[in-house]
Image 1 (cartoon, helix red, strand yellow):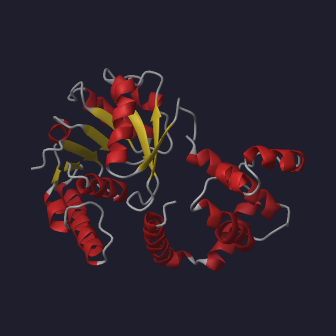
Image 2: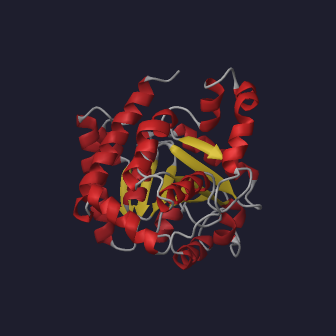
Image 3: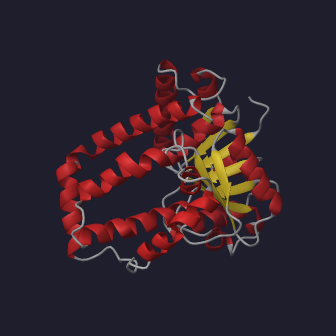
Length: 314
């Protein structure tokens, strides 16, 4: 047993598995909960295979070897067993509000006052998850990016009643497991990542809808252009480097930027005939039967990129 304390993982899917590996890499004892023993055992076997493979390929995180990390992870089907004495509970069940609220109602009855209740949700505000809870001041959102093991961003989102110690300790734990947390000052729909992502998707939709570019060329603008920069720099630092600092950038380009932005159209609803047009073009690029193969390629590419970023810090 590790002296670091216990982390509870509720939900044994891919996100839950990734969280378990991340916490084990930082020497935490990890208990994974799901409703059936079959699901728990399947998750544990996948984690074992994944850790052993990563060790073989030299990309295992942390100072412990694969066996030592595997030994820190166990699975249970008793909710009280995963919640009791946990430093932090990381919930990663399906994105259905009623399912999450029912779960939190059960957790609320058994959780202690010093346990952080953290949700992986990408959809729901922490206030919506916790408003009826007695321990609502302990709930916070820690939204990861898939796959969390190789994409380190975590959005930490408190509600208006989340206690300050919960916010600070959650961030400290995420930094300890070598993720890259950002803390929102307050909750906002879409958090930060999806708000930025949706703004990009909105303009991409309009470029295709207006016949300016096809789907492949829009994606090329990102993958071979902006994405090359954004893998290492954010949009603000990009502007900072593209002129003699950000102030100089605005002096040069603010008028032209504003002029272009005045031409932007309202946000689309992503419905109607164009959905099938875009879907067909994407199917021609990656047929549905090849999605898993393409996802595997994506994940392998992210692994290589994460290793490159690790050894190329400024």
